[in-house]
Amino acid sequence: MDVGRVPRNPLGTLLAGAAMARRRGASGCPHEAGGKHGFRADQASRRPRARQQQPEGTDGDGRAGAKRFTLHAPLVRGTTSGMQILLLSGPDLIQNNPGLAIGLVVLVAVSLQTALALVGSVRRLAHQRRQLSRERERLAYLVRAAKSHWHNAELEKASWNGWRKFRVHKKVAECEDVCSLYLQPHDGKPIPGFQPGQYLTFGLDIPGRDRQLVRCYSLSESDIKREYYRVTIKKERAPRDKPGIPPGAASTYFNDTVREGDILNAKAPSGHFYMDTSKDAPVVLMGAGVGITPILAMANQIADSGSKREAWFFFVCRNGQEFMLRQDVERLRKVENIRIFVCFTKPAPGETKGRDYDRDGRLSIALLKEVLPSSTYDFFMCGSGPFMKDMYDGLIEWGVPDGRIHFEAFGPASVKRVATAKIGSPAAEAAPAGGKVAFAKSHVDAVWDGTAANLYELAKANGVRIDYGCGAGSCGSCVVAVKSGEVTYKDPPRFAVEAGSCLACVGCPKGDVVLDA
Ligand SMILES: Cc1cc2nc3c(=O)[nH]c(=O)nc-3n(C[C@H](O)[C@H](O)[C@H](O)COP(=O)(O)OP(=O)(O)OC[C@H]3O[C@@H](n4cnc5c(N)ncnc54)[C@H](O)[C@@H]3O)c2cc1C
Ligand code: FES
Image (cartoon, rainbow, N blue to C red):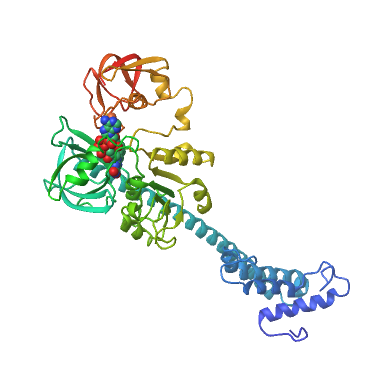
């Protein structure tokens, strides 16, 4: 600007005054233009201009949130420049044009107030936005909790006590020795939902057997499809070292004898091993062999409900011939928030990694460490005893808290939790070591030394066979008469056992005991 010309408008006059003052300042004024301590108008105008070149909503470092600055910055800048000018050219201006000086003071004051008001509004807006986002989160949580309550109320309403008849609507051969049964209620009434991971208990009256067989099978679908329940059952072969022994009674019956249209007796879904659908913490789901069933229900639940919950799904089997429920797993690959890893331990000739499966070998902690970003997940697993023991021990070693590891054993538990393995465990408290347990029918005497978690495990370890269903004190399969002594429980079992009998799967001896087994 040509500082020698006096423009007509007030601002021009003002700037001209400032220029004059600067010229005068050259002869000894402490605010000398360009001097050591002097304010340089070009500095004031250059800095914000540099900011204006930055992308919208970012500050000099490219951080978001600078919008606040850009909004009120011109006002603050203008006010500051006005004050600078007023200070520099004040005495001359008051002398030459007092009206303009007063107007300028008012202008500066109004600008200041406006700037402050604007800053306040921007802060208030930001605060309101934060509050709104917190409120949204709170509401989302409340909706989830309400849904969960509603879900539980629905469960209660449509649930039933005792046996209910189900018709086998569809039977599908999944792979060698494995079938899925799609069950619809015979009474045509609605069926309750369930938590993914829970199971149905079946009561089977198999011809030629003197008593009803009770067995549990996990629901392998999500509970979104409420027209039917699906269970997937693997035929249990006789142990390799005992070929003379018959194969599993119930699983063989389901696979070989049960046909579409048959009627089966089932109890309502139950079980404590499930994924809480009211939460959205990321999960790692691991299944080995037929242990895929409850794990798949969890992954299906995430997919079918449209949840955005992060999930990692791992499945291990020998090869494609044992890859049950493959279609479900392939469908899950298309779900954005679920990552799938299928491991084959012995791929069949012609099976190719990358096409038929993802990884060679076992599902191991090493694989988890390789692919998971961290260990901060809730881990759910189901499979053979050795598989779960390896994974559990590895997870604990990796620093995963015991409370974040959840597992289901289809037979007696083989995993000893670190929390309960310590001295003072509930079993040890219920029944101090040293008591004698006699299995009268089998003529076997055993000692309760604290290594078995319950009487069923002690019987099994000593070669005594007791029937087994849920392993959780709710089906009554393992009822054994107590001839003498007392049996105690950590928690009261759900199955109402008669006086004089006990549930071996959850019972512990209180002193010396004689069982009719
Ligand atoms: C909560 C839960 C969920 C489950 N979910 C599923 C599921 O989704 N899918 C699934 O397939 N299974 C599941 N199971 C396992 C299932 O309940 C049965 O335990 C399984 O099918 C075997 O039952 P079975 O009657 O066929 O075998 P059993 O008759 O109980 O026999 C078991 C084994 O003992 C052997 N045996 C038989 N007689 C003798 C004898 N005299 N001496 C020694 N050994 C003998 C058999 O050869 C067989 O290997 C689940 C179990 C639980 C507890
Ligand atoms: S096995 Fe079901 S109550 Fe014991």
